Each structure stands twice: as C-alpha cells, then as structure tokens.
Image 1: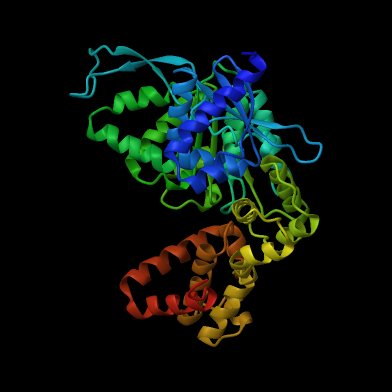
Image 2 (image 1 turned 120 degrees about the vertical axis):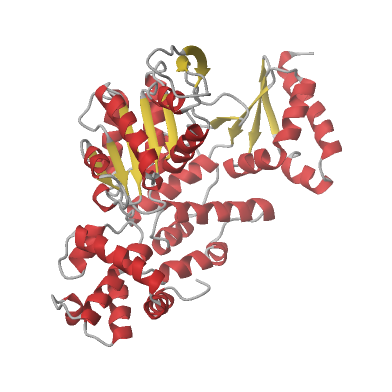
Length: 474
C-alpha cells in the first residue's frame, strides 16, 4: 500500500470502530465529515471544520478516539487536528488533548518524614519529580488581542517573558473585572517564558488552590515538603490571589514570596481588585505586591472588541459577516468573556443546525446577553436608586454630612457599587461618592457587612435596593 494512501486506510478502520460505538445520528454529524490528511509515523492528522467542532469532539468522544487510534495504529498513536482555513488564512494545527502540553524538566526536591516537622539534625531525602506547569497552550500571546484596555499589561508581559526576574516588573500584579483577560495574560507570560527558557520551572496556580494545598500539607505534617516544592519554582503565576485568605496560608506565601523574589525568580499575580483594595490581607504582604508593577485591565473599546471577534473567527475556522460582528461588538460591551461566549454560541448553533450565521440568528442567540448589557449597573444608577429609596437628593448623598441616615445611605451606595460593578476599584468608588479615599470605602463595606449580619431592618434596606438595581430573573 502506498504511504500516501495509508492515512485514508487507517482512518477508515477507525471509522469502523466509531460506527459500532456511537449513535448513528451522532456518527453522521461528528465523524463522517472528518477528512484524514496525513499519517507520519504514529501521528495521524485529520481536518475538522471549526475549533468548536474539535473541542466538542474531544469533550464528548475522547475515550473512544483514543481507544480506536491505539487499536489501529498502536500504543504510541497521536492525533493532530487541522482547522479548515478562512479565506486565505493559513491552516491552524492543534494537538489532541492527550498529546504533549508544556512540561517542566524533572527537578530534585528535599523531602522529610511525614511523622513530624524536621529538627536541626534531621537530614532530608531527595526525590526527583516533574512539576506540572498547568499552562493551557490556547492562552498564548498570539491569541491575545491587544487594545488600549490591555496594552500596558501585554507590553510588560512580553518584556518579562524575555527577561524573567530581571525587569522592574517583579512582581507583576494584574487586576480588573471578570472576563477582561487576566488569566489569559498571566498564562501567556508563563507560556512565553517556558518556550524561551525551557530549563526554568514554571507553575500556574490559583490563590484558592495554594490555600488548599497548604492546609492539606499542614494536616499531614508536610509543611517542609510544601515549602521545598514552592521554593523550587522559577516562575510562579498565582491567579485570583484575592482568594488567598487566612493568616497561616498568607504567612507561608509571605515566606515563599521573599525567597523567590530575593532569588531573582519571577512572580505574576492576578486579582479582581487593586492591591490597596484587598480585604483581610496582611499589610506586609500588601506592601510586597506593590514592589513591582500593578496594571489594571479595563473594558475593551469597540475597535478592540471587533478585533477580538475577527481573531476568534480565524481561530475557529469560520467566516462571519461584518454586520453580525458589528452587532455583537456594539451590543456586548462588558468584557471579552461574554463577547467570546456569544460568538461561540453562534458557531455552535450554526454547526449543529447546519445553518449560516446571520444577523437574525445573532439577535436570537444573544438576546439574553444583550438584555443584560442594557441593564448594566453603573455608579450613576446606584446613586440614583439609593437616593430614591431614602428620599434624599444626590447633593445630600455626596455631601460631607455626618447625619446617621445620610452616612448609612452613602455606605450602602459604596457597598453595592463594589459588589455589583465589575472592575470598580475602591478609589474610584470613593472619588464618585464625595471624594472619599479607598480606606473610607473599605471601612464602609465592612460596616455594611457587619450590620447586615446583626440588623434585620438594615439587611432589608440593602436587599430592597439591590433588587431595584438587579431585578429578579436578570
């Protein structure tokens, strides 16, 4: 058999296995449309119409795909996807999820007996391990659209990736509301460093995961192993660091921070708020967050939203009309995540229903998202509703009056602004509510929280106003 035809024969054998294990209708939709492209050694490349198609195929049928490939090709079988190009764009190639992803080299860690914490005359053992960097290849700089909203963060991130630990941006602290690309930017830095400096150990972890790992280590008397693990990292990326609450885990993180920073290692953090606005954090830790550079990611403007949609269309391998993209970019303004979600919903509907993506489909599919955008909570709306509820003027709310009812109304406005407006810093809230500083706003939020837990009538005030701002069913 000619080598040129072997990939076709192999894929036909796989199709025979799929047909026996998959519902006939699903087989026709998800397998018969796939085109075998090539077979090089044990690596089979297939062409699929969109990245959504590829993602769904793996989510729903990965175990069957792996079983068929290994049965037909052998235990070393690998699968690559090629996404059909849009217009004159070059084809995009993706590894299957069970193929190689970024890996760190093996490192040697000092380990102690779990029975007790080591004393001065207890010598550690040595264990060679591979630390999973936990990086998603899709979150690279190539897939990150640059605009005024994130230009500073991307510029700093690229500089860091070229000289990790050797720039003034250490640590880099990225903050902003949900869906603005904090995780993508942080992982892109880790991926770029890993590609350029493969000998460096990169680790991505969330604040909550770090806290959970620490608590587990403490329960098993393995704090020394925990510290040995983290002090071996060259590039530490901590996502959602605002979730790292608790004095003991913060103390451990403080010591790890000091060790890594003094050793010239790179630190990257993300949060939903600025360092000054973090609650329940030790001052000594907050001061260290400010040693490097902190960058705020803002809501994207329309030009950037359009650029993101066009970039994602190329990545998905689909062609979407300018009128549809303009509709999405005009009506969905809050963040990249909702904008991207609307586009993926359109592609999913078009793929599953075998229909063309039209403006009418976009209107139908994104109706709920668009209605949310129209009802977006703003500082102006919060102030207006609070004034209406307590029957006071806006001038009174923003005044320096210390009357109890005015102070409470102002504190409730601060509390709701912080909770309902994404990416709104305490400093911004303070400026909008009578020129207060961030410490005053933080005190107001804590006061409202305390009163809500002890005063039933006060809790009713806050609940009533919140329902006026965010109606049920929104």
